[in-house]
Image (cartoon, rainbow, N blue to C red):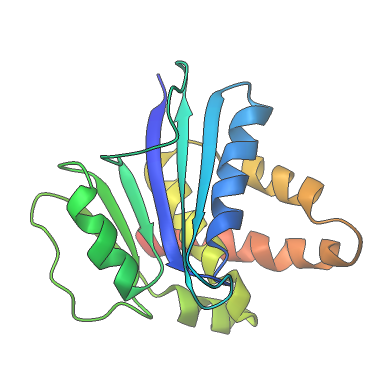
Length: 179
């Protein structure tokens, strides 16, 4: 039985929306009910951005997630906004490259992933989102890396096709960071 409610949040330009879309597209590919709901701040690049993704065997009635099962946090302002909403024993995945010395609730499971630095080591800071997505996949097991990679191959065509390999490495690095 699948019923996963996730909020992904960060600055515009960090790939927050792409992470949500990939999860939603992967659900669609497997004929699982899903809903992706984006929310942008006043600016696209550099402003705040978040999206909600619901993946469920049951009908999805609303795009609004009041108590997520998981939050993927790419920056400090997003942690302040979404940590209070996370369900008890929920997963809080934090990009520790940008969120440092924070206090977390003691009734949630926190996983700090040095996503920006891992992405730099891979040679492209822009794949920090895929590092976080790889960690998410490893912890939730909602989809496999191969299933998400299959969606990436459909989405990244033409000149973007060359980015598939580094995104694959980023997903793997994210998995390794939390296991």
